[in-house]
Length: 166
Length: 159
Image 1 (cartoon, rainbow over the protein chains, first blue to last red):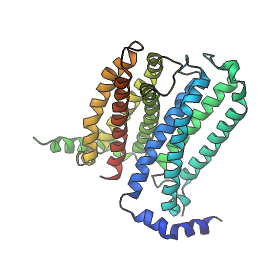
Image 2 (cartoon, chains in turn red, cyan):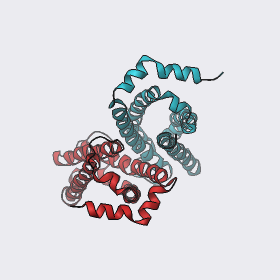
Image 3 (spheres, chains in turn blue, purple):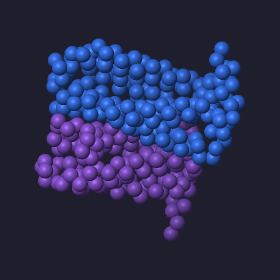
């Protein structure tokens, strides 16, 4: 159903230019990895606090407030480089199970994040300094850890030719 | 003396051959290495941001560093134990990659720096180290730990 759209993007001169540039792919992929380190690294530091696994002495709202700008910067960096990587080779990703699994995991992780911030986080003042936060908070942290780890793993596995359909 | 004969002997060794025969082995090792990298980056950055004067300010620097320590050491062990098999897997490729050698030069320096200079500054009593020195220590840490994964990525891309 989406194939004509992917083929259309694939044939655009700017997509071809990106695909054929000598260092474009290398520079984008390397920047993608660095942005991922910034984003996922600091998200993990927040998640282990929520899950009750670490950083236990720091108030949760303090971690949220101080790390949020850097997490956002990392997310913006990985999104821009990610979109460009996709734009340069849409047909490479079209039939890849790992790629679409990654996108699905990202959507789930974002839903978890939204639910946590719009609902659960409202009562933060009640559990801000808890060494072990309430179960629903811990669950949000654990789900986030599992989903972002799956995003990183499926992202890496996208490089292989396994589970690829034409 | 050239290392090449040693490298070729490793490549021909039983352990290297056995690892290469399994098509999924290198992928699994690679994925674990990357997950280790992400945890490592988080535990480094949370302290470096604080060294630079940002990050978690409600907490003394020494406490932020103490909290980050188990994640730092755990992820470092995870990366070393998945990094060495990757060298054994494709030693000749590594040998001919300038990025591998650059990584191997900076990595030990960065590890030693992290567990000596950076650790001492992070554990020092509040106010004992001037802010400008703290910032410098943080900047050097971020710089070195940025170059290491860049080199790692480029071994795979530009070899």
